[in-house]
Length: 114
Length: 112
Image (cartoon, rainbow over all chains, first blue to last red):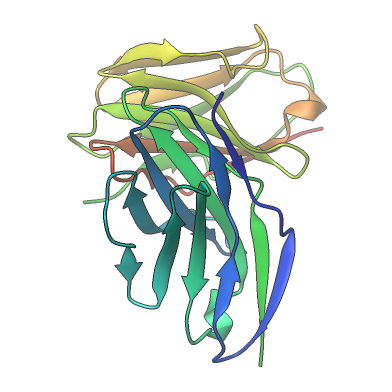
């Protein structure tokens, strides 16, 4: 069965510093996609970044990058130069190709300190 | 593109009443998903549709929950009768490709 694990319930980071949010996954399917979503206190789910299992390079989107280590089955999110507006809940998710399902980890709450 | 539209944004109802949540997916998206979010259980996939056909409803908690997608532009999630433990935020999401889902703003349901 597919599973996503986020082991950090809460994280603190100083403004302008970088932070890494951990995500490990479990699947026996060789083809899958990994996602990160941000959920601010207002509640909406905001897509941040995507990594395909066959992608050779780590995905990047502005200040967000995904540290993809396939052999270790980890897909950590790196946020560079943290901003106060980055304070939110962050979810790692996995989609198994061919099923349509997107399954989520439990989330990590990030607080950025001024 | 108006995004995924959910209604109502907030719903407060009494235990035992019927509740209907509505979703309009993004035009052209062929997948539609219903999720429930609670503090205790996180984000749970309840059911999803592909081309208006229910594919997997294994996440639907019990027979009190039902979902329909009569056409490509509309879906409902119904709870009857509602119970206090159904209180949660219900998200609808749609997708056309494998690369991302777009979520609606959610419906915050409170059953008293």
